Image (cartoon, rainbow, N blue to C red; front, side):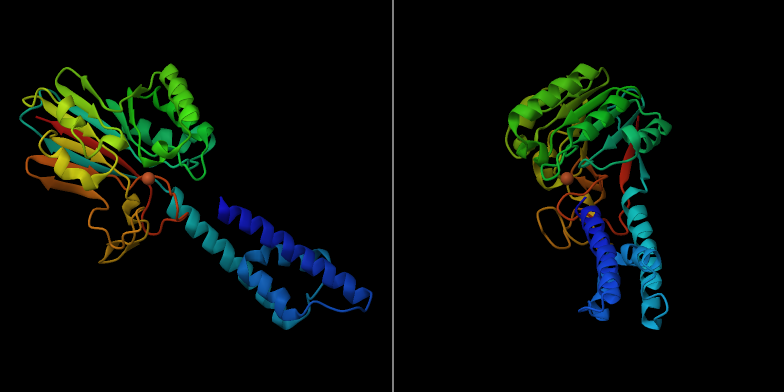
Length: 323
Ligand SMILES: [Fe+2]
C-alpha cells in the first residue's frame, strides 16, 4: 500500500509542477528548473508528468523531455513486473506416504496471507484452492497483518474457503500482536462461518490426529501434552519452522510458513531474508526431514515488512497423504 500511496502522491506533484511551470512561463516569472521537472518523472511521476505535458502543452517540443514518455514506459513495465511477482499464485504439490494412515487425504495449506488482495472477495485465490479439490484447508497463521490490518480481506478469504472444504486455522506471530479484543471478535465471526479455530487443540479426525499450535506455544510442552496417541498419524499445524526439534517427536507431518520464502529468491543462493531479519536463512521453503517427521515450509502468499517479492511467487501448498 505504501508504494501505491507514493505513486499517487508523486504523480499528483509531477502533474502540478508541469502546470505551475506553464503558468509561470505565461506570466514570465521565475521558473521551475528543467532538471527538477525531469527528476520528478524519473522517480515514479512519469504518468503525472506526461499528462501535464499533454494537457498544458508544456515542454512537448524540447528534446530532453522525450525522456518523460521513456520513463513512463519503463515505469509501466516495472509496475507490471512487480504485480506479477506478487500476485501470480503457484501451487506446489507434495506426495507423502505413511504406514500410519488408513485412507488418502488431500490437504491444502494456505499461509501468511498478510491481508494480500487477490481480487474481489479474494476470488482469484479461492478459485485456485477450489481447483485443487482439497479434503481440508489448513491455514497456518498470519492471515492478518499487524502493520496493515484489514479484517475484511481476511474475512472474505474465510467466507469463501469454508464453501470449498473444512477450514482449520492457527495463529501466527502477527495475530499474536493484534489487539486482543478485536482479534477475539474476528475469531468469533469466522467461527460463525464454520472455520475451526485450532490454536493449541488436537482433533480426532478418524484416521489421523490434527494438532494446531498457537504461535506462543511453539517451543513449550503444549504439543507433547496435546498428542496422546503416537500410534496414530499426526498432522501438525505450526506457524514457524525453526522449532522443528520440538515438533519431531510428536508429529509425522508438520505444515509451517512464516519465512515468506526469504522474500527475494536469488539464483543459486535461495531466500535472501527472513521476517526476523536473518540473511540467507537456512529454512525458507520446501520439505525437510527431521527423524521420522517431514516438515513442509510454505513460502506463503503475502508480505509484511518488505512489501515486495522477487522471483518468489505466492504459493499454495497441496499435500497428498497416502498409505
Ligand atoms: Fe508471515
